[in-house]
Image (cartoon, rainbow, N blue to C red):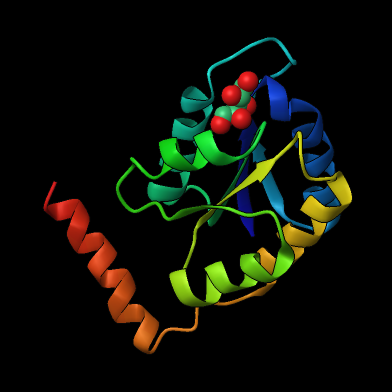
Length: 147
Ligand code: RB5
């Protein structure tokens, strides 16, 4: 799959490791930065990944900041994005199955690399369930038209 990934300074170290992890799994990874651990603002990098996913250049996005919270809040401002901040693998699977989440946001400060790898595994392995969930996801898109 085509995966776009980015971080802020707090998520940089894990982002670097996760690029290698995703490539090792055979995914086509676009690292949208930053290139070093200098201080940056997470909304700038959330927007890069969100626009890549919303624009169809990536199938999924991964964003890493201190908590993952700011990345999710920012990415969800882009139409078509369903970004979820996940700290345990079973929630990653449910976010795909029920919510058709297309951007995964991770904590680089409070969740280990190994746990984030397990979260990514669950997220990428789980298809959207469709059915009753599809109508609910459509209603999320309706909210974007009411802005
Ligand atoms: C940066 O200090 C921190 O605020 C950021 O990485 C993130 O956790 C925000 O949600």
